[in-house]
Length: 427
Ligand code: MN
Image (cartoon, rainbow, N blue to C red; front, side, top):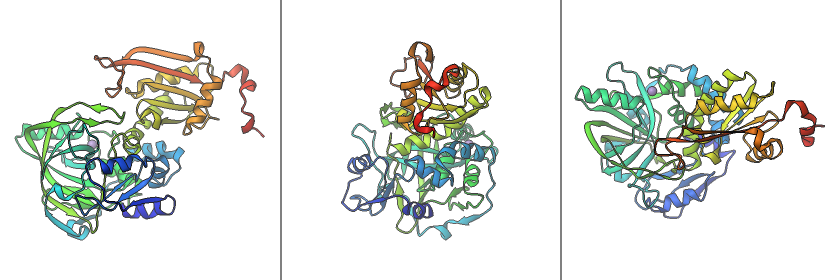
């Protein structure tokens, strides 16, 4: 992460906060007041360790992390998911960390973000584990509620880590894990991609790093982790559950309390003067990390329907989850409607989608609104799909999980193009 910070330093203003702040509410409040900035909290009341946030809270920063332009991010993610690169450069804990000792989570500046939260939460922790049967590695980001000095409750949705844990339970064994905090944004992004069960997210990350990624071999568990500021080692306890929640999800509304697995930690390794990465719940960093890896799904589904699709974005205003904008080179009247149907089906959580021509910049909400304002005739161009399966995060969703989906075709009609020509874009 340090080399990435050096790269950002030339292009973005880093806000250093020297004022003493508590991990309880005060830090989160400061982060909220700088939604798109990179910020370092240097003086935490409860810990000597500094807090960093906002390393990837804009598409511009993510583009730098992936060495591409903002408009190329989706294609970069597709390329990396399809071409994972094995990692052979493995170093030891002692080569990489300044201090190692038994875990005491009280030493870390773990934030308690909002008043109704279940407690203090680790929000930028990537859990690394291996399939108990095949040894295939998994890396995924999870929210973790602090239960004690060496215990965490962890929200695990039924994907790869969940399957490993259930298998370990069947074998009656703990599942060894490592938690990496403070890692490069490209690596973080790779851990949120939906790749096949037998693929390794860290090898996807290595593609982002052009094959130059190194891993660190843990001390007490048989796992390798990406370079990080803080490394925790421990295991998921079989058959143990604890109350997890409430916690603010990316829609800026509360998720419910559930019974979730429990982690017991043993060792902790720290870089010299480490940076503890905190992702503000519902902030842009949270939204982009969760939403960006869904854009390839939508792009590929639309591509299947219309080869002249240009780009896809899950917009920040739509929580990078519920709203998409798709730009196309329209070739046949009705293309817009077909694209709406493909996009809504591709990402089941998608609620509203707008389709625009390629002269509209889908990364600019004002430009998208311009297309809706000048190119939409409501009775012709709006498609409403009631009672479709929606997002569990959508506050409008019915108890059975359905919601109403809306598609807006904001493309120009092909038979009257001149009337819609943007004068400012022509010579
Ligand atoms: Mn996996």
